[in-house]
Image 1: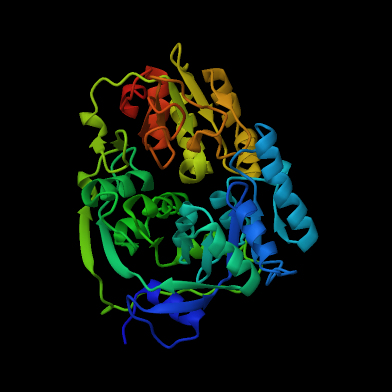
Image 2: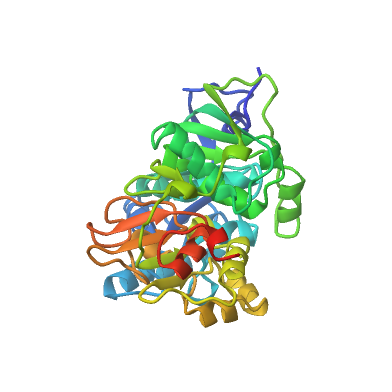
Length: 421
């Protein structure tokens, strides 16, 4: 029976020859991830189950990245729970302090997640890893606890939607714009519990950083997972990082999809998502005059090297507008160091930016950039719900790094061409 890439990975991990949408399965998990918000609950449930040892100390991964460096006593206590559990269980993949990075940038970079894997994470943006050709999805803390004990998780096999992107990208357009454009078309529940499969010649020529950005936001359309079939770009990314074997899967030509959407990328300009939903997208040319107080460039969506290089190119020789705060957050220590080595920090600092250590921080209204009442931010993050970055009466607009950087210079949401004349 023909299957999609998502169905093939699930079937393999469930020990089945084939699966069909709607089927309930139990599957073996390659990587189980928790962070400083979700893992303490999972650890509590793990202990209450009576379990003494995790199913595999190399496959349970803990990354305290949301409120770190610890912003207060409560966050310090949360991280302490992770640290003590990691020490007790002798976990191979526990990261903190100078080793910690934003989890969904860190795991691919470290070669912890690989093509063909089945990954669960107690964080909704675990779907990021689909960019490597893995099935990856977010789960609740109790599901994570059960997996830490058994090494398995249950799933309902999702239907798949195919998104075909054709053509060459317009100037200043990247993976963030491709996914925002799709979400704008289908809505935040348009792919509810569906696998979002991205393909077409545009995707085939897309960088790994942009692919990760795309799959990261599948959940913003309600998707169970986002996924891109691995290819040479994937191979080049993982071959030097992988510490174990991996497997490339691809969809059969006659695999069945619940829907197929086809987009001409010649029609896709840089996108801006207006409050308070990622589906409220507009072309940058249709934004109008929107003054801003804060700009955030970073997060698990857009804190990678490609993102920082683009932002630096826009900001070089320019200054952040008066009364505007620009916060730049490299997603991992390696990205941080590389940005220093390439001279990007000089550009950011000369422009008047604040540079943060790797953290999720402001994305969830945690710290390092919380908004006050009435303030407005444009961010390269993934969500702009009410109160997402701070006060319930603040506003968050979403964009790619080029638009965010240009906006920092202009003090309003701006097209990159406005500052690159």
